[in-house]
Length: 161
Image (cartoon, rainbow, N blue to C red; front, side, top):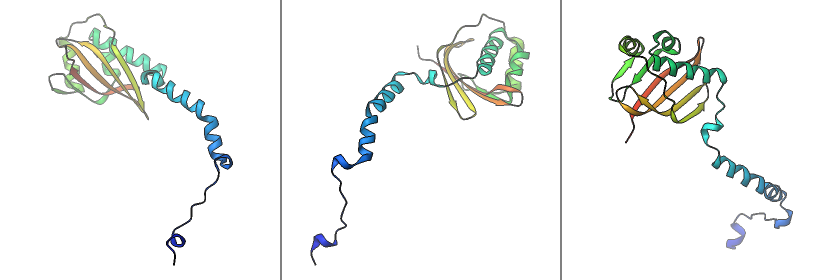
């Protein structure tokens, strides 16, 4: 018995006869362009953020700046938690109680804002000026429930100077 006879034989076609290769090669310029564009477009622009969510984000940011407890409460989920820059974990009730001692201030626009979409959840990350702590990275988790778009959790981390 010869060794070659026991090996499985692979069927090979000349390059010109392989129709799949021709189809792939004809799409190559289009695929290269799509890949290049996907690298150039920031992911924040790719996420299609619903208008009602954008409005909810703006209204909640204003509520935080103006210490508007009623608006903040309406735009915050019942099981909300926040982890502050110093590592303190607060529930919705504990954070809402802080509003009674806060002074209103002018809203400061976020910097380096990025919004990503994951199924039914939107995650917003931005560099913000936070009361008494200076610049911080703030991560908001937005969910839609029966009451509309609301924040379920926030993580605040001090930004390096």
